[in-house]
Image (cartoon, rainbow, N blue to C red; front, side):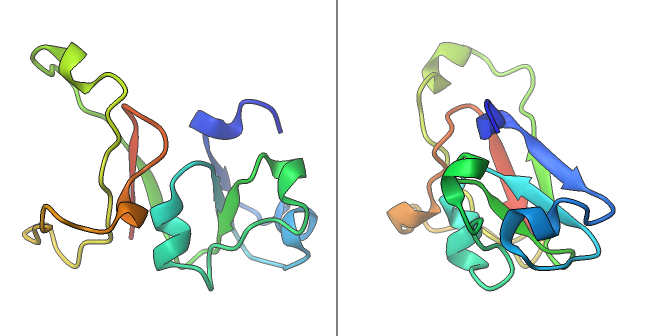
Length: 117
């Protein structure tokens, strides 16, 4: 898989599952570069049997929902260039995060973010 680093692939019928890690899933989501997803969901978001074949992505099963988050109309967007983002599982929309969360909660892809639910 080349250039998977910015994609979220929704496997709606589970057809990639067996190829990915030999596990059969009804559906799944393949994503690369967001270590907080694997860190918080290691049992349901494993790496591929041969990680290099899948660009070191992880595949989350149907119990984990991953969505792309897009920020629009950011004033002075240059302030955000090459800045890593913190990401974490939130229990509700009103939950806030401490400013000193673990480095494992930082995403590896600047300017893009995902929320695992």
